Length: 465
Ligand code: F0G
Image (cartoon, rainbow, N blue to C red; front, side, top):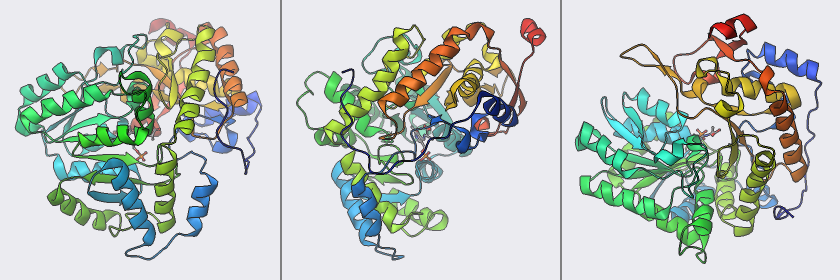
């Protein structure tokens, strides 16, 4: 068997929508070639995101029934706080309704105009929240992390040289905090090693800069450390998590990923003065500190999810299922980012469609084809998401990586779904020479990929590009 059997059985099922190719063609045209605009009812396998799409366990559903919806002091809050303290080890736990709110609270409190915030690679909402506070988001991942084919067990690692250069260039007082995203989503769901976390901490200590984790997929990162880092094979996943977070000053977390829930997040810090400032802001924008924009029952589901996500048999199945899909594609020569990451398989769109230039959004064009071919919804992480005009020169700047992400929701799809997905992608790969790029028709000033509208370029336009 290529991967371990699911460590659960299915108690409730949800029908999967089926559509014809004609319906999908009509839907993609109507959507402005933007998969965010496609109604979910027209999607057969939804790999748009692993965020908020997990199947909860019977234990979590049971937790919803013991939700205490008191405005202040809900018992579920205390259980949630106790669980988060136990796993992450930080004294101040501030709930928020999702990860980007935790980011917004943290950055609006810590980042000032002209500041720089380094990270391995910033996720789109993280970058946008820093820029919204007039800061600069700087990516400092190791070079291997930007090369889809480089083989490295921890491609999410921070490049200490790049980090130190950034600090020196702008000056210590212009770097209010440093982030580390575990796993590194925008770089392919790649893990960061304990050794690298320790070294990052040591470097930041020399400058007195706080370290915060973007911890959305911390459990998957812990599992990779156990499997890949020398000396960690016999360690318990909880102890790895505790060690990781012991090197930080706090974290932001979207519980929609490794919290195994459909909504929720939180912010942790060691710093009591910062916690107080953030709590005051929380009351203004999210709610009282014992619910932070969530229902009591949501907090209970998060507390239970955080315990389940560190079960070794769950993580073994989870990581192996994602790798299984990657292997099915790799075997047929479909270019994917390697090694396969924790939550998603990433297609290397530049290698898949070498004739389509980045100015024509090859990853977006490929994502649209996958939808038309088999009703599979994915997300572009490339020039549409991260391309922008250089404010000084006015020239278009494109990201290094041009990818289509197949994010696998947790505990949702089966082996047969993975096989169907791989077969659909292989069909598109066989006719890849017929695929043309796209042109932007409409874009918003920030986070444009969510609402952009595009159109296919004609054969004539393609020749001219
Ligand atoms: N940080 C990382 C690394 C993320 O992947 C996300 C969300 C967030 C922060 C923000 O969390 O959605 O709860 O506000 N990533 C999702 C994705 C949306 O599809 O990768 P949020």
